[in-house]
Amino acid sequence: MTTRSVRIPDDIDELLVRTAEAEHISINAAIVQAVEQWAQARDHRARVQAVVAEVMAEDANLLRRLADS
Image (cartoon, rainbow, N blue to C red; front, side):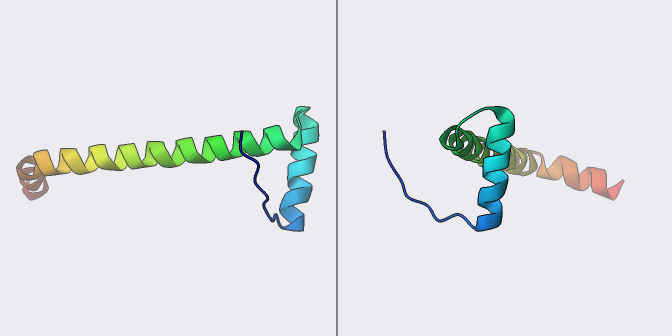
């Protein structure tokens, strides 16, 4: 397991503490969950963008014909 030191603005830290307490989890667990969700969302967005680009490239002619109609 890796240990990191991060600087968190006071207002974000207050939100973090309140949220972790409300969820009955540690601050560490809250940070780990937040980073995991953020990374998964970025990965999902990248995969969706790749699929859209692939569809647009494969169906460029069809999309042009649809736009002309």
